[in-house]
Length: 404
Image (cartoon, rainbow, N blue to C red; front, side):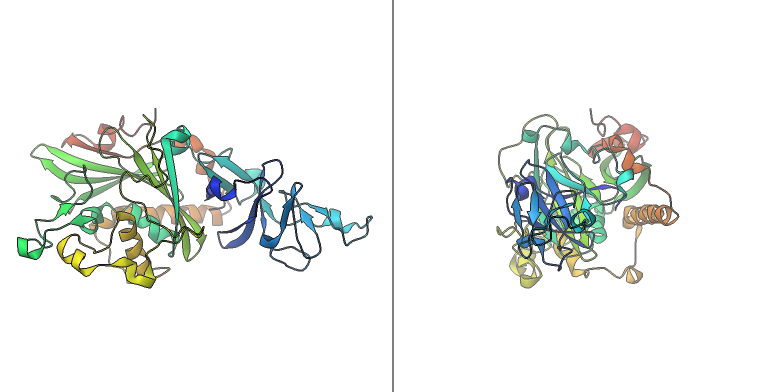
């Protein structure tokens, strides 16, 4: 993870110059973010090195964050710029420095790089939401209480879409889990009529391209093509040739919690000016207290309604995003994968795990990952389209997956 630029805050969380500092936990580290008097953002160790006071309670003033216990003050680079309780000629001020990480604002998010500063990539991955105008994108954030990898694995698992995210007729109307089930994702064909797609995975320059193949006609297949972009991005196909595209970033807070960012963007036109814009129904309503914690969660069984489950949808839970999050969290904070029994529908998940383990092996061997240094490789799209049966899905969808 430390080889990549990582998104960690929305700009509105750190808007004010000399405003209140913000607690940040990222990759298991406790940090503090603040915007200084010139508008620059610092991300520094959460604790003053003097007596380990929490700098969240610090005073953000005159291009630095001052600990209110003894007045030690630090700039965005972690340099100590003032020690009012020490002699004016004390060498201590020049010797003291706290951990800091570089920060960048790009594509509607605030990013940091937590690796070797001499090896920092030139910029974050150029996923299309960051390339369009601000009026053409919408970004939301929520807390997920599970490991980032099992959250991401839900994002590349196309086989559950026509099952978990579906509506169903009540039993008295002849409904049930059988052939009368229909997809709850409007405008996306074939997901319910063929609930056992065949999966094909191809290496890509930035991760992998996943093709879920369903029967469309005697001579055609419907392909739902999604992207996994290392280390933690997934992309949902748009409903047709136009309209919004959606994607996620599953950013590790620590081993057991994840920041889930949901991005919508339309490369062709502006999006409606709505904070809660949700073209594909994947947003999860959160408590409006700055915690980004979902309103429904483990504490209330995710709002499950058994009457709704019997008469309306498969899960009894409202919303595609919350349905996913509920099941991923109920696996436990870190699922015991030694107890899993994987099937053919898990092809992409197996491929993802192998890809990530390969990157881990490279880093353990002392190699530098090449992908973070190629932000332009991320200029790809997802797609959903019908192709003749004799056409390879990557070839047939090449134009649809190209960012122009």
